[in-house]
Length: 422
Image 1 (cartoon, rainbow, N blue to C red):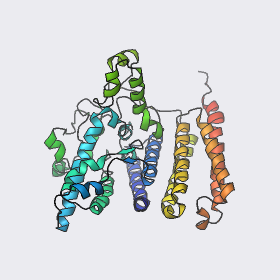
Image 2: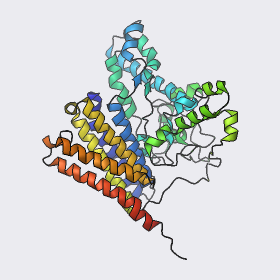
Image 3: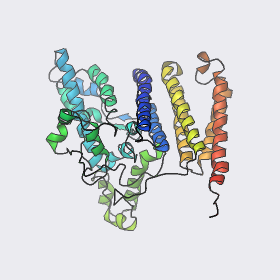
Image 4: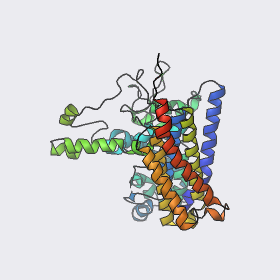
């Protein structure tokens, strides 16, 4: 996990740089594809994901080294062939894992966050899951294990394969000629994120598009069908933690409410969106019917609130980078506590972005907890070793958090809710 944290220490600034370039490009081309609150929500979702993954939170059903040890029937010797086979195996496994996530109710919960944005841009790529707490992906690497692909090769290629899926989440790149027949391109992935009936559940490939073409899930982007983005059951929140578990919560409620014991069991494994007939009738859930005319989620976001949300997101990013830089020194128990501060922080300020009344109490609790931790330890997870008086900076940050929560809940919200006579 420390190696993964080190990789993220370099990858995160690179992703943020590309994202800033896209925003600047859109500004000067007068074709902006970013909205402040949506982009903050997307980045915040990515921050929750990398903290969760870097801490190794989750249950691995079976590890790839275990499969390799017990199932390998041969071992590829040629170095270049090992890497090629490993890449193809990872991409093939990624296609089927992706397809599973789109077609089975239970697995859709761990993927819906990625599709929840009603925009499509590089920030959208950062919407990654924290609800995938059961690790089963190694099972899909059985071909690699049978061929004896070393675990070290898989460990190196897997994050590279994941990071390589970032660039094509953009609307600023058109079709790419002959490359459209080999790799997943921005045009193909726009189709994948679209909710148009023509595009739903298409283009499930991750790096190579050949799997979609072979297995009947390919769809070209049509000039007459402009992609519309989001999910058919809109998330209606900027809070990435809530988005991660919305679908699961619906499944739990439906399984509880249905009178059929068979439906209580099979709902988890039925196609995405399936609901028991009795529950569907008594508890209807609204979905988007006209993808070209639906109200996209927005909140009463003043310039001050947007600026404050940006500040909180950047402060959280800085804390995470410090956590990765000091990963080995902090220790596992310290990392869990650090991660808790990050998760509560993101939940708090994104709830504030939603104008939720309870957000202020989360912010006050987090601020007081942070101040209490600094008072008890005289430090902030070893920050003093790198930045003299760093604890005072963190204490100031937590004070700002408390005051910001109070201001945007009670003062500014009251002001913005005043009706102006016609």
